Image 1: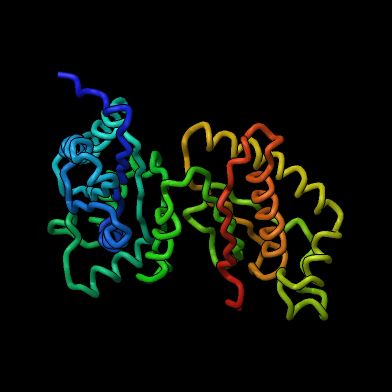
Image 2: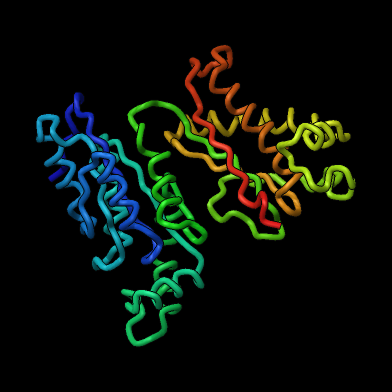
Amino acid sequence: MTAAALPAHSALRLVVITGLSGAGRSTAAKCLEDLGWFVVDNLPPGLLDTMVELGSRSAGTITKIAAVVDVRSRGFTSDLQGALAALERRGAELQVVFLEAADDELVRRFENVRRPHPLQGDARIIDGIARERELLRDVRGEADLVLDTTRLNVHELRAKIVAAFADVDEPGLRATVMSFGYKYGLPVDADLVVDCRFLPNPHWIPELRGLTGRDSEVRDYVLQQPGAREFLDGYEKLLRIVVDGYRNEGKRYMMLAIGCTGGKHRSVAIAEELAASLRTMGADVADGHGGEPIDVQVTHRDLGRE
């Protein structure tokens, strides 16, 4: 028997929280609960459709449901992907949030709480993590929002969830522009990565070394280098194509990472410029987007780290 479509007037939203054990699913769920979402923990994938059905019959008392789904349910991967596909066919407004962290950090967290990994059996914690990553590979690839919690404390993770969902009823794309230093590693949750190490490094200019890309002297130096403006103009054109595609696909989140060697000078200046370009795109009514805003957040991951 085929499930009926949701009523046209239904304003029900569903967020599925999944990802690696120990990566912060419970923290994310608690944050959504604090934001007024109806939260169900450890829900078998097969019951997602039932939850949506019950919510649609609540006469408006339940409009936002968050369900935590993990690999402990039998046949997790196929069950979850099948349930999500069925909900999309019914017209449900659905988002999938995937949480992950580096292996060594996950091992540390399990050892701190002295609990076994749910999939390790008689093996090591790291073996359980590897098995879980493999099971979740396809789910991660289709997630709307991927959050890496390796370097996040509880408060920082809550801040990211609040930023993503506090005003989720408002239309538009949420974009995070992050500068970083390659010597500290790539941001694993980036959708797009830009390398600006082709520009001369202000580190080698004595009067600029102690400044950052936020200072006008460094910004002017970086932007006046040959190829800098051409690069920004060209990448802005690329971003317009990407933003169009994200909107057409219904994606609400984008992470753009800008890297240089140490994450202090070039990447910071370029990140600020590209963030300004994204804000302009959101306000531009002449580009065919109807003036739909882009909520742009800028963060400098490695600034002050050296």
